[in-house]
Length: 321
Image (cartoon, rainbow, N blue to C red; front, side, top):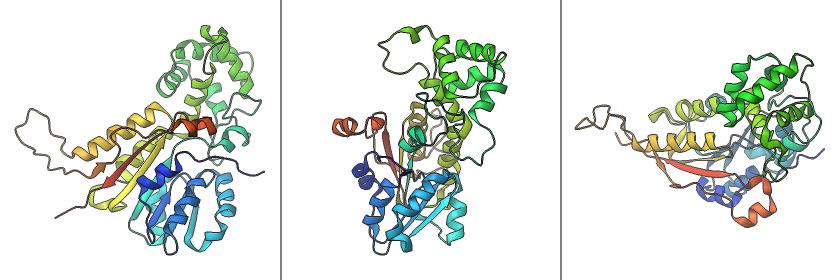
């Protein structure tokens, strides 16, 4: 089965990633390799592309899609937090640009059979990397009610988190919850507004999103990447004036990226009451997008999955000793 996915804001990504011939660029979330192919076309003939994805389907697809450029492409099945080790393996100290697209692909949602969507009848899995042991079904059937509530409230920003968690626990006492349809029906039964036919989003949307984030450790990995992988002053893996572009689809992700970019641009972390800086921390990055870049209406009309995408970009500031 072909790996179907439409990349979002491709022209905007190419602009903010500042792709140049001969440069070294990383796509840490390959997906359908749509961004990857356009990046490679910009950096040929002597550029080098590094593609990373933890989903085996994405890697297998990229091998076919990017076959014409195979001599300039290196693909790795891993999470983007493994980038330092990958670069070390390749003998590369720093790169010119890094892209992360944190959204799900059309393939994952509609064709992977791993239960990312509540629209069909699939196993309640939600693992992006099937080598990981813990599935969404494991969380739903084993976590304490309080822990389920915390996941739904924190990751899904679900107003009815307590009520949904209580209903899940009650239902699993009678029958193990193993499929997407089971869970969706349980959530719909727990939420009063689920009875309204004019709701814009499905009542189970936030619950499914929260469980997916928890299963894959998405926020923790993004936080680690932003704080410990890319931006450690002189040890950073971005070259001076290298660009970092991140596309998020969730308010928690976007907020994390925005705040981290601001902190890296500010440098100083001293309390405002101090008359002068004593922390001696310098700015590391320069924010290129004061407000997030969003898809134009025409793109959203062509690709509804792009409607919640937000792109933020930042540039590594050269360090002068």
